[in-house]
Image 1 (cartoon, helix red, strand yellow):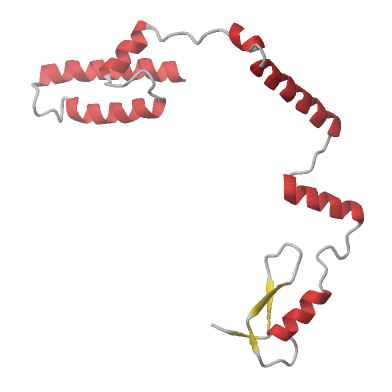
Image 2: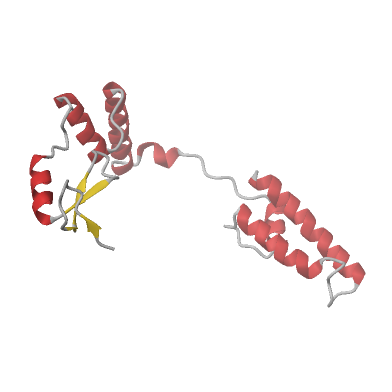
Length: 167
């Protein structure tokens, strides 16, 4: 739908968009002549001091303004030291403690739920639901009630073990 030009007493089609405010969320629709006139006179930074203009520019380019330049400098120094340690000799990285290996109970529980060692809690929950549908004593069709109950009890125990491990 073509709008009418928003300039007073103009009957031409408003085909050019021009901002109403600095946040650029609302627009006027002008004909070409009135859009050119409006844009020539419109100043994005009107009513702002030089410091406000600089802060606005930094916020738009770099994100939120820095509150504490000393803290930002310290963080930059820490990051540079981190990179230097990593690149040159690996510093503290070679002395970092290794992750503990999963215990036998966790490995067995993962095997029971047919999961790899890299499984997450989300994977555990999905596998438990899938296998519980197969082996629940009330719904298991291929197994007799006793073996289905034993299999389901094993699945439940494995699920509880892994749930504790991940939480």
